[in-house]
Amino acid sequence: MNIDRPFRAELDIARQLAVLASEIALHYFHRGVSADTKPDGSPVTVADRDIEQTLLQALTRFRPEDAVLGEEFGMRGSSPRRWLLDPIDGTSNFVCGNSQWGTHVALEVEQHIVLGVITRPAQGLIWWACRGCGAYRSKICPGSTDVRLHVST
Image (cartoon, rainbow, N blue to C red; front, side):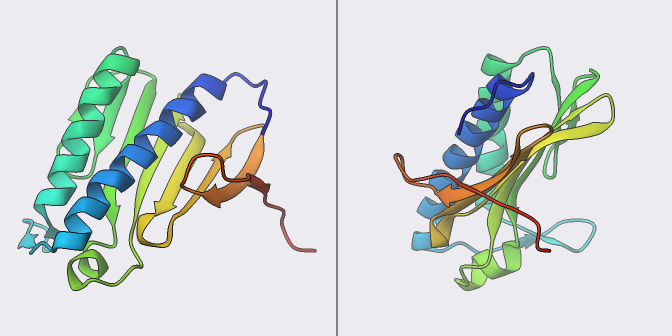
């Protein structure tokens, strides 16, 4: 994939974050975790919190001037650029050992989503899209071939 667009560096960061989140999540998934209940009634695990904390630390290094909105720890910072994190989407499936869960990372600039990355770690898959560069999928493993996605006719 050859992207010469304004968000190439951010897309690289988002993909790194998504792969990192996937690696941490798989560690917990394979050993099993239980869920607690958040005040809104939704499930949360130690994995959700660990992943989000790790991604927050990484973003502090990569993009300290950007804000972050995470599902588990809420809003941090104030900026027209805001990273959106969902450490484990599908926590109920995650806890039950079902492979239908994933990690989500997106970047919003001036209230417009400019890129997003989702994974399905237990299936080894990753998808991403960036404004002006299209949408792609591949295997999470390094060296896998990127496949450009198209809408149906």
